[in-house]
Length: 345
Image (cartoon, rainbow, N blue to C red; front, side, top):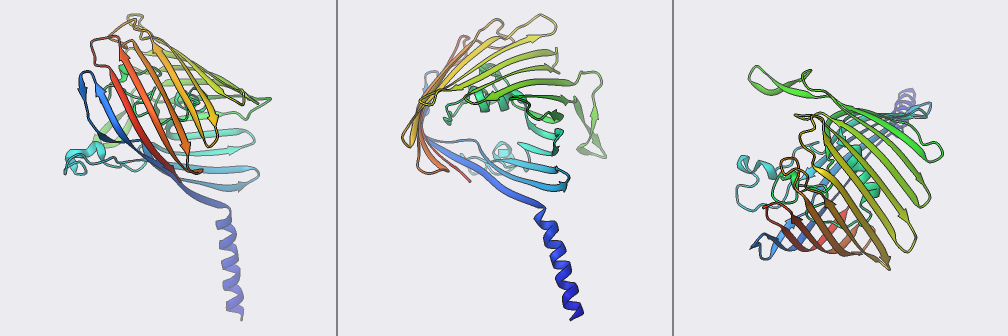
């Protein structure tokens, strides 16, 4: 009897500790059916992969209002176009655990301290306020739009920090602020093992990011200033705002990039997006322009996208999207017409 009581006590204690923490699995995936035209070349009918992801996230109650959190997010590999796409020769289509986000954080009444890999403030603000459409545009506003890695085709810049530390204060009367430091680090080989260690590169400055945000009722607005560590060094100023009228919602983003040496300037960008809910779906679209002040720093580019998204359920939607990207340089323009099926879980 005593052994039984001891076993029950141990089980109860372990159950209590398990109750203090939780892990959730979430993510999403989408496939598009349609056509892509790059310059004079037409793809014909194609199946294009949307960005899919799988995330493990957890939280543990430490008591006293403190919580320890973690997130591990992985991009899901795409469609194989040849028999070798999932082998070493097709490494770009392979899934790498934690390639999108891998971080830990501590939160409480003081705010949140974050450490690890994750989205920049610019990308987070763009997704939360700048782009209100919810459309799965195959080549997004902030993605390389013409060919792999073609960052000059972007209208808005802002992706992820490989690793950074950040502090976010709790909101006060709708206002909140955050600061982040992304150290410049260089992979160091040891004993023939690539990237065995990471050393700080003192020769290049670290990246700093400062954000002030306001959210109250239908209005949201934010400004971010990023002092970026690049070859020449640059500063990025981004303004984002959104307003919900009920019958329609609008988003606006402005961005200006200046290189510290003054020799190049990619030019300013402006993007306007809008969405009109209709029954179980919504009509939406966006228009963005980045001026071409220096072809070596960033091409002038305009992007127009419109579409209709129909929600089959809370997690599954079918979208019909037209996306047009025009380049002011000699690079090819791009036109995409797709039906996209997305599911989140």
